[in-house]
Length: 210
Image (cartoon, rainbow, N blue to C red):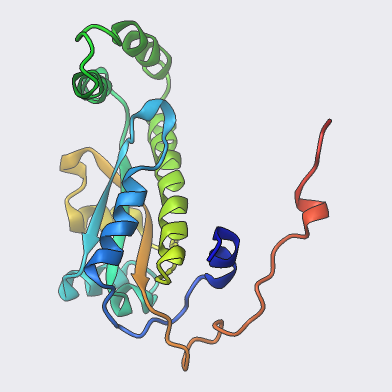
């Protein structure tokens, strides 16, 4: 099945049936997500995979009581860096040159240049930039899930500060950016399941400049 067919199949599932996503499908989705591109290759975010029922109930309370949070198979929490630092940048680039078998100082100039651009900017700008990188991975995760015929519902409707507390993210220098329940649609009780997919028409959505 082509990517277009997969994306036509997927929708923001409103009711999940509680069935478990097989481990091999979950692993595929997570690996596709790990391979996502990011600015300067920093991947300034982490993903938390949550299945603990008690914790899911607590997150649901801060997620507008959306049932997918507890009816899903796995809840992915995309948590972005709360800001950039030279130490964080160096850690990523040092691993890169080591794995590529390059001299340790190969990326020193680029590290300094990048930090020189980020350091003067506010922590809020840095955190928002990191969150935008997480959203790139979110898109890849949803596409991979659709390919595996796993339903996924992106969620911004939650209280990030409360989820951060539940997962103790501040100590890790992270902030929750977006939630992604993975599971299977409840075809009997999901009001959206048979609705036509509607998107902006191509002639309005795309402008060609030649």
